[in-house]
Length: 543
Image (tube, rainbow, N blue to C red):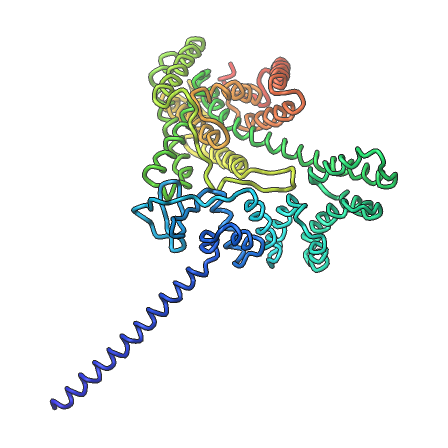
């Protein structure tokens, strides 16, 4: 019996010894693999390398395209650092140091930490090397991005290489871009026939630098007549495409301006349409929404640094609530005792606007504060070289449409909206059927003020935030309300689109001041012909 126990114990000990040795070998192998992986990391090698080796790596990148893109992103954002031992670090938001590549947080920063920067020669090699690496990618989007870079480095290009790429390219869009690139290189040829053929290809371009190239060629005195005819035609077609793109950009900018105007005017349309109150403090409620956005961003930076890119999700409801609460307070304390006395109400709300501006100056200072764009709203959609649709402008347009649809639903499909419409059309009859008009007045004024706060939140993403922010939009907001029709949501939509787009287009040809004067004259003429605006309000309020 003892012999059996002894044999069993011996077998268990041997099994444990074998398993522990296997585990140790696996751990050692894993550590060696990680060490080899770290030593083979291309970014790590680049950071440790000297000038000559760095240049060689950039000219012939030994790693993947993703590594190259990350290297460019880290250098462009000033986040790549190293110490004297060659260890690589990433500095996030100037406050958190991570060791590369495992991204372990470093509590005690090295005393010899230095930023990895590039001299102009290496910076040029970096851009060109990135393009060379992307040209070998199987994804057409990567190859198109490479051509964008190469077009800014024509002097470094090898004509034979571009010809080979053009012959072997299968994607039509990439092939067309390569043909344009090849034509720009061929245009420098001394052979006139080659130049003519290249000019014919460039006729299909829509790039400003190609237009500049064609215009420069046309200034030559001894230009071949046949080449000149082709260049004149190319100039005309390229210029037409560029102008069409620019006008499309102006119209888009007008839509964006109209969206902000609409957000600012919707609140006025509700308060003036319901209460008949000319609220001169409405612009300051827009300003409060913008400053609330700034405060929320600051709180996220201080306490939730890793989530700072999502501060806007919290800033939107915060801006609405803060502006709505202040608006209801103004209605209770200032406006309610002055109902029916429009001149006194106008003067009182003007005084409130001055008080709010001074309070903001006392708390935040007289200078503008910075509201940073979040990373996922940076950049834009490039429809052409001269037409970029910024993501933040697109987001404002979408946000305005969502707010508008929610407001229409609230006013037309809810009990509160029914009460608002009843009080707007006939206050005495609404009171007679049991509607507490004073409570509806307060809530409606709060709703209008909250919409002003949302306008301020949107404005903070595209402009400066300062104490005078609201003064720049209050007049335009009143114009939208007057032209659209008092208390009419859809009238405000049409008026905002008309004033926003026409104002942007007029500014292009005659400047901001003259464009504003012409708009005001047109609005005055319109009001003389149609005092009730685009849509007339119905009910006894008109009387």
